[in-house]
Length: 273
Image 1 (cartoon, rainbow, N blue to C red):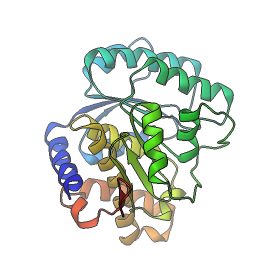
Image 2: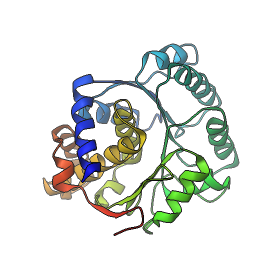
Image 3: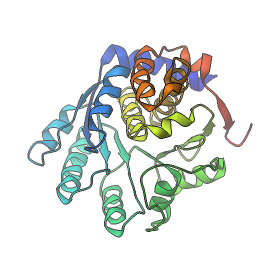
């Protein structure tokens, strides 16, 4: 299908170009995000000092903002970097970790999306609903235990409300730009036993966003993580989270352009199964 053709072409372009992805990200998962970015073929920088984020963002090919370990100065850094990225014309990818959990966190995320033209937002269902409907107190933690498959009409409506490309990851992953929407069917339960797989997925999305359109980048980055998880499990990752974690990076590194066609699963596209 065309989606997988576009994703495969984007992967080849990514590995040829090796785009620079500037992260202002979660301290808990920073190393894994850098390694996932390297494994897929891009180059990470993790600069977060307010004194230099504008310069770094202007030199990058994509900017990733992750709200995980939230501090007042990280929000300031995100706003400065976001304005520099906007001026430079590079994509901005947001991971609203824990949005809805506290009033401060929710207000901080909303401040970012109200002041910066975010290209792609990736989160779990409760985080994304929080942003779309500006509700706080609906997500007490950052781990995704949502078992409900996202209705394609819901993610389409949310993308329209937010005016950007949206990814909801969970039992099934869904992507929409408000016009084109898909529900994807790859992944494995072991991904929920390793902290940071959501953050790493956002890093993969940002890597693709540096070389292709937002919808393709969102679907490709999400699918690389989900398919790599399946392959890591099959290669021996079922022994436990430690083995799975190690094998996951190998699977991302070994991912090929035709892996999308061979393993990618689209459950629903624009409302059609």
